[in-house]
Image (cartoon, rainbow, N blue to C red; front, side):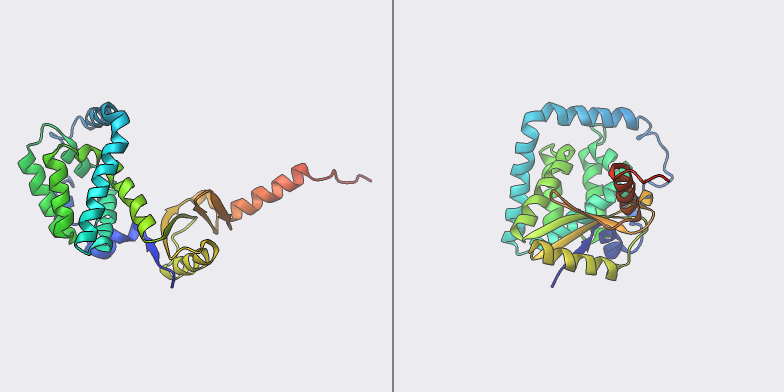
Length: 238
């Protein structure tokens, strides 16, 4: 049976409402985050300084997380945790800024991580891993680490990741049918869909996986017709 994962819904499914940890950053005074652009530039420079090592560092920590999860028979649980954290960071950038800010004491960061884990229902294995990154000053590379973890998870579980671009949000049943068809095309055991809203498509959807693409959008059909008219034989004139 095809398995469809909608990343944009993972956090909602596990929390149902904004967590108190995230609400801390809603409407709060901007004293700490007033220089957000500067802070993000500093974070970018820190990752850049790791440059050639960042991929190696990410791979090492991702391997450690995979080994930990497999050893505890919790690979799928940890993967769901990673998806939840990715969604949280995307929806509330201030949380990421807070965790990356070198001015903030580690104690306060640890408190926020514990609050996030409690509110989102993260496993203790994931929380321990986050605290390890904090202790070893690797939180700034968390995105790269999560990316590497995702790659390894997909290999281990024979999961094909696909981006599903649509003009409007598709229902879960529609996503399941798309995933099932994609499973037949790829032969993968599992399919993970990442929904993206793209209003320029007008209607329909586009599925992108690996180097392949399935375009069933109105825009795609219109572009195809335009190309055919442009490159086709000249119309006969009376």
